[in-house]
Length: 110
Image (cartoon, rainbow, N blue to C red; front, side):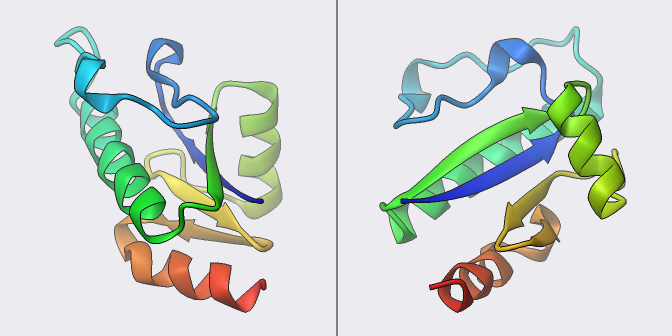
């Protein structure tokens, strides 16, 4: 099973589960979070659902930039902390570039 690491500014409360999430039951981030964080959450949620639909064998995992692992990824790949990235097959792909880029990386890694 391949892992796709999603790196971004996520509140710990809204981390994705390592298995399959039940998004319908999950609350949206409240107004106490900055607009950037809420926007990124929507982006990650949509990406996550699309990824699982197209690649059910993939395990998405989130890592916040403020965690030790997130800081390590940010320094290693020189990531812009205002964006969300998918780390796949040694590549850091901004989610704004879309699922097609991640799909290409997943297929080239097999």
